[in-house]
Image 1 (cartoon, rainbow, N blue to C red):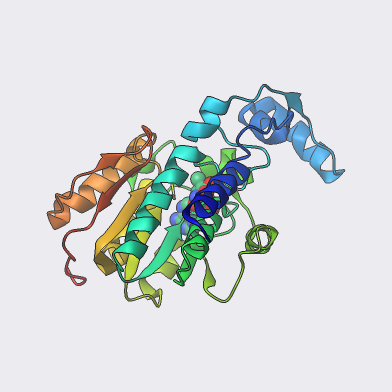
Image 2 (image 1 turned 120 degrees about the horizontal axis):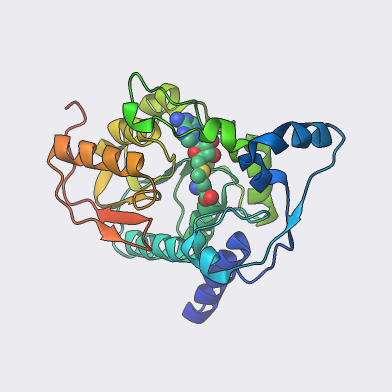
Length: 278
Ligand SMILES: C[S@@+](CC[C@H](N)C(=O)[O-])C[C@H]1O[C@@H](n2cnc3c(N)ncnc32)[C@H](O)[C@@H]1O
């Protein structure tokens, strides 16, 4: 593959996964679920296979910065954060940084599909781990994580619950499902410490909550190779997530520079592997 063909494939993949430039036309019930009195109406309609829909204009700026929750796209992270993932993977491959790629918080799988496509475009074979409940977010455990108080995405955003089968189908849609794609189903608190991955070259955190961020960092960050990347999707947009990142970094004396991607996503390059047992 020529460099130009590779760039074009990756660009096309990003545009397709975000439906950038595609007008979704109608916005279905998803947005209405924020209006409490319409929820019972929606529920009744849904039982009959119908949806309450509203027409809404498409905004390419929102899609570029990952600011809307698209109706049909496989990812909500936006073009800029996908481009950042591309740059990270390009570096990992060019510098032979060892380790698998892990995403905690997958939704419809789009960011992971993109990572798999980029790996394929560079002829790189790495295992990719998709960690999610595949049932949406947990209800906030405010006695242990008061930072999550008031974040009710478990109730308000039922459409964050996407099954493992649907995510696998999305991978297949792009011809990217193979034996190197692993699904890890369950709450992070139950699954991540026993993940059978020794080395991680890229850890992508996208679980929104303080709980979901810290429960991923604790077991997985120590496995990131030197030269690997830690990418945090919600750092700029969700205070609880940002707090988890800083609490973790402060506890472990991590001073690697946090680089902003698009006002919400950030990343840093790991310069030192921290002690797993600390
Ligand atoms: C914002 S979505 C991820 C978006 C996705 N990365 C994309 O490309 O569009 C958050 C996801 O995290 C998952 N999640 C959040 N907290 C979790 C937890 N503690 N355990 C398991 N899954 C969790 C939800 O099920 C949901 O799929």
